[in-house]
Length: 197
Length: 156
Image (tube, rainbow over all chains, first blue to last red; front, side, top):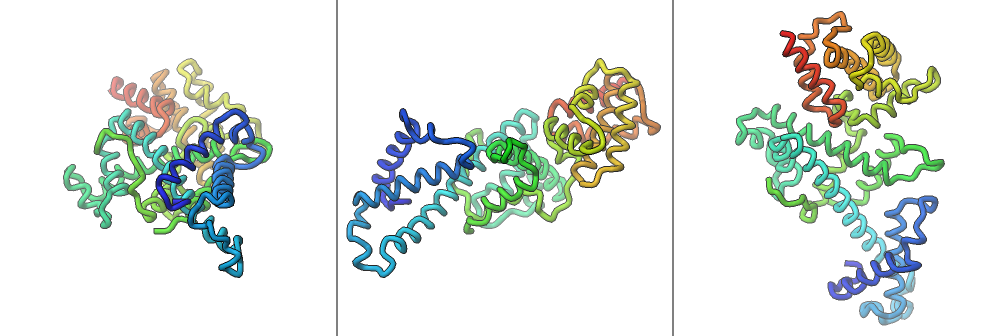
């Protein structure tokens, strides 16, 4: 998506991970003192894409934009990177949510809460555009809408707890203090606000 | 429900936002704060917060209330302290922490010593204990209520 070419994107991904993990690589420069790790990764990826374009490897930018646009590189880069950041952000949210959801699934299966989990998944992860009603969800299990909702709410509570704990572990608070609930809510807002329907 | 790992690849922006909103405590929905506590670590943190400025809290109370070796007399002291903390608490989460500690101390006395340290008939608490045993996120906390349920069942 960043370079609008699947093959080039694959090459760039390989280069990124090589730079990330190799000797003297990006991971060695990561430090909690410098801020959040995902911001560090985002910046590293952004730098790689800047590098990619500046070295003329992107066919779309082989013509110098100063010749065609009043704003030159700045205008092009701002638009490009805003879109790139939105894509990266969305992917980041997806990966984080998937990890939380899979932990919740394991927990529910351990506890014999398969029906609770099924109701939650059909309500929140269903492919359909139309969200099924609690009545519709409860009927196959012979449950009224209230019971169906309560069962799914149990899983929602597990999910809330798991995701908040994951975010708490990721957030670095000055002085090494534990991130408060308000700080975690701010982080959730920051994850939510750039997302488009 | 399939056995495969959950993938979020096909989720729409609306669904992603809905999931994130579920994790927020800002949402204007009523919450059962007792169940929202989650686990021992969170309960301990809330109890520490509750005791801030008034007394020291080093985690010993929570360990004691879960231990089968804590004498009934100590559980009674914890119960009274928890009751006071719950009454004095300002925030909903802190109040819930004090309340959960109270219920843990009463359940622990029933579970580990077959003693009722509350003025209330313990059988009246049975549905509530069943609810907590099933719904609490943390197994270490849930097991106290499970044992209390078993003790009540064997006594009746």
